[in-house]
Length: 190
Image (cartoon, rainbow, N blue to C red; front, top):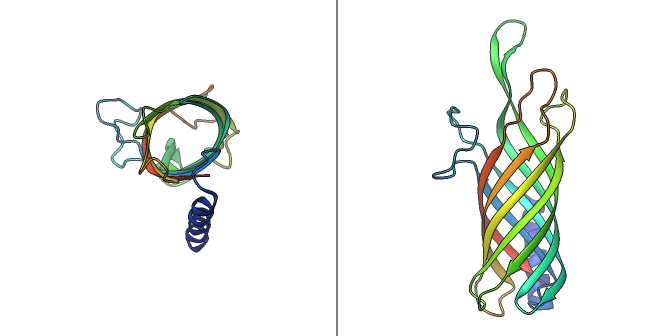
């Protein structure tokens, strides 16, 4: 936790010194799979899946108010059911694990004035839902909005909806259903 706070403090300082040139964006988000009005593959679960993501975004091309970028996204989900009805030698239990996924994303954003910048991102990555399961390929579709605090502010808020789709099914009884996550957080642009 101290490392995360130190890193965020260093990023804020660097963003203030560098100004808001908007070439690189770094952001951290809270995620939750309880998305209103959208089914998410976890309707029968008692506990929601929560987590966080960290993202580094590099602008590749800008044309007027459009911004094209490439991003690396790290996603951590807590308490994910990876094996239902697992026999542990004594009882039949549901097996839960923390799941980490790494993504590469291509993103297109269009700014309306300086207040609202909707974006769409698509990409792919890999996940390993359990130490005994094979690594899986996962595709991601993201739709969201960036909100800068002021026109020249290096700080922005971000809200998005992620849809993750695993390619194929893991072997040996493991599961990894399609998931949707609502995410929101803060970022800094340099």
